[in-house]
Length: 359
Image 1 (spheres, rainbow, N blue to C red):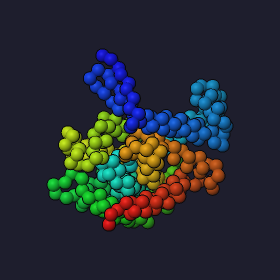
Image 2 (image 1 turned 180 degrees about the vertical axis):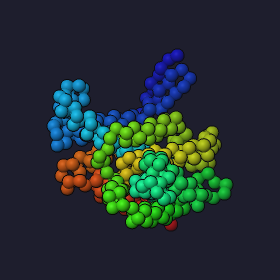
Image 3 (image 1 turned 135 degrees about the horizontal axis):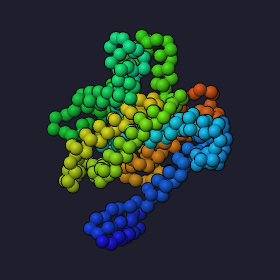
């Protein structure tokens, strides 16, 4: 068995061969992915050190050189928050990338399709319902499971309303329009539950709904870590199929891709990953929309790539958290910062899509 690395300067790729198997390695994407990993690591250290010490001292504490007081501050207070921020940003961006790939539309993300709103409705029911009434069922299940049920219900309802007989992928315009309507329906559910809830529970849920990393522990890290692992596992196992499916259903099926399995499996994976991330950090706005498109423009790839999009999403949330804890007013949730950036970016995407449209 031999290994051969053959460069292709016309496409900027390198063909890696091991025996009869071969893979194409995009050099530009590899360089940007390494840069994204380094940038995320630097932001991670900065996030741990904000208001406490320097990134160099934080690295020393993590490597076992800290005092008892320093270990308590880093490992019990700050580290869970920063880990949840990075993993939630990674998961939301990866989920947005997956939905954009299978629908071949940059606007088709969990935010726009009603998935995160469905997850939010389930989570709010668990947070505010107490031990009596209809919501007691969700309270007993817990926030992560309730958010997952809400996200799956919203996705199923959205796809059922948009489904066209004989088509695996329905009209993306129809999906987005139904998703927007479904989002407002779920927002109505959330509003009703909030008005009927206890004042304290309602306040907690309201802060969570904006997207917040405050008061998070290691159990939250485990939940969002599971989401990231699920997303990475599916993306790595279906790298070729996802790349080919972006060429269109006819070409994908002609090249041997089981389009139904890839499409539905990818959508279910995106729903699970986004719902679990939302259950921990709240619906942090626009990460799933903006991060894949930034990754696409940086790496100059034909479509967003899940891993690099996830790194960009992690960097976005970590940066927003650093801004919230430094120059922003005290207690400002990270979702406010990401919404301030994502809103104008959404307008830009809509304008660009309208200019490309032949109609």
